[in-house]
Length: 449
Image (cartoon, rainbow, N blue to C red):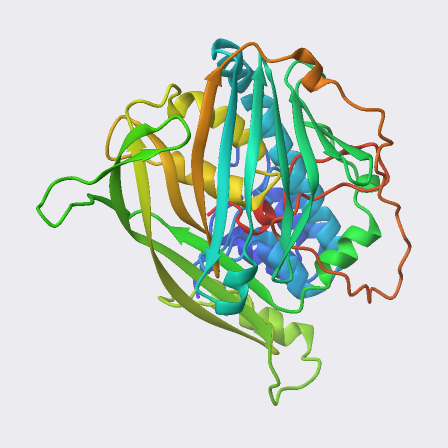
């Protein structure tokens, strides 16, 4: 073992704060997010070994709380495996601070694009389907109504989310006001007459992360990581039996669209779970540290991550085929509508997937007026742009009703046995406050490579 191999990782594993301070001195030039021979960033070792002091130090020096290991696991997932409330809370604060800072930088650009775009009313229909027979019969559809006025837009939907293999119906409005507090989303629940306020770029504090939220995150006993692999996606024109390119009229406005078959869209699914093994219940920390020190500098071609003795990891690769309809007649460009989908992406999983897909380079210069894409491992969604009307939208559509703010109470639960669970697709709400953080659980899981 070379004494100079990955010194940052070695100092973290050994819990040598003095050496860390020396290595991270000003102008040291050290890469805090470098992966070692095992493909693991130093921050992950601090989490895995349960060193909150080292974790806080690395974050304070600028280590990225979204940086994944080469095996695909995010810092939050490592924290869930450790079962530490303190570490989960620290990762939540660091990650949300990073995301909010990025959005603060991005929002002026998005607002400028919104202001330049003509006002309109648009309808976007979502239809969901699944290869699972029982689930397929339960898959819903919904017609999203989108109103855009200046730097503001509103989206009305009856689909609340997908949780525990069940769809949740309701009546929601997402009202984005671009010139209020630097960008605010009001989430209006018309059925329950409640409201949540999402301040984009709001500062995050420990007080805003409730025990209830941490317990909910820690209720996961199996960690599932889904990663789209899109570098080999290809678009092939769909042909008739005579060899002519297929076209179809899409939406109420009947835009002529060319049909393309999409292939090479893969989804890698990692499943990290607990297993029974004949190992000592509690190995000495010194033994674990020695093993990690050696592994850190030993190159490997296949590594499942920082697994505990009672964990195992399985991997599946699922290949999807989709279809996209592209029209030269749609009145808006992808670049114009991306700001809306980018802002909506953290609110609902299917908008996140739609935003990712339409950001890809399409096979022609037109707009994808209809798209069939995977949303969950067992569920695909078809998004169809049904209608677009350039019109002066009534400003009253953006009035906020006098609903009470929905406040999440901080329940002290010292035993950590909260069995509640939430879908990865739900927006994460910060607790005990009138505002909520602009981030979501899926973003935490699907953080930076």
